[in-house]
Length: 251
Image 1 (cartoon, one colour):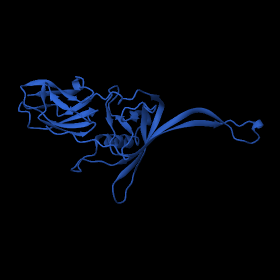
Image 2 (tube, helix red, strand yellow):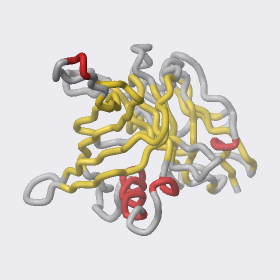
Image 3 (cartoon, one colour):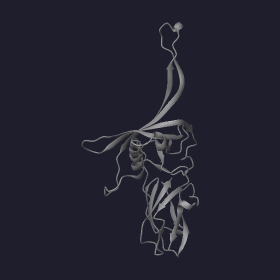
Image 4 (cartoon, helix red, strand yellow):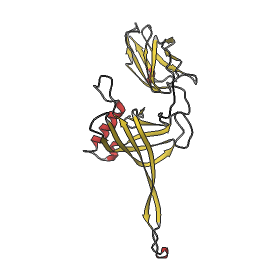
């Protein structure tokens, strides 16, 4: 069985995570936006002039509301072959391009912003946004993209989704394979995979697995008789719950 890579936290590690909902309403399907080099959540008061004669020329403002946005610099990411773009980044690009022919409201989507280590720091939020601007760097060197996700409506405080570090599987691919088991690699997607101690197909251990990131594991399924089984990821906190998203069919 593969050994688990050592996780090291440095000053380069980002504190906050940004998840993007790529599901078609009312389906919710959050995935982590990878390749973030810089990111900040900006909340601003909306004001109107409210100067009175008695202010003797001094400015006075009345707060009438607020606006918010997330400003992100992305390292434009492809697969190793350079033949396809990271799926979440491609989703954002497609949503921006769609605004050329349709209104912002039709291209809104959900986001979650929270401390990646589960800390309840008062900065865990969710809301709906649209891609207001998309600015590739161009020129020489690594390609980066400056993106503005403009808030639409309120931004709500939420319980940090990473507060419970029990693994959660959101999807697997492929979802089926032969009874021989070790003739293919299965991609497992979700959250809280860092430090995983076991990956199981039904009651049997995976032949091998590698933790690619906190949200991605690649595993080789063991041999099994024809059946549909639960794929399960376990870490020191617990094991992923059984849902339809983790079903793997041997045929």
